[in-house]
Image (cartoon, rainbow, N blue to C red; front, top):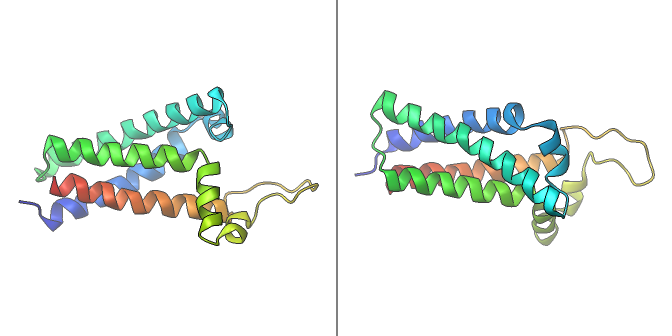
Length: 150
């Protein structure tokens, strides 16, 4: 029987693991290459998502053991697959940019990006970064739900 404590514990754990996996574990090469529309971009993104998933899976496994959470192996696998697939999809960047455009959010997505023909410095505080992170958090919520209820 699913319980809210398992969902809450997994959700908090995934959000913490997300910050570590997405920012500390990802290599500079992966961050700079994963959006390329070629084999190198796909490989860089896959490697990032693999290391990211090691962090999220390890976190959920540690919480499961330490707190005797009500998780099944099916729920664990479903949550990790949901997280990994949606993370890869968004981190290819052109996919999320396309979704933002379809949702009428292209101007928000472009906030803070270097301007065409200018030597602007890119920074983390962009609309693209905000939409990327909110996408990940939303799907981590779904992953926590699947982990807790399956």
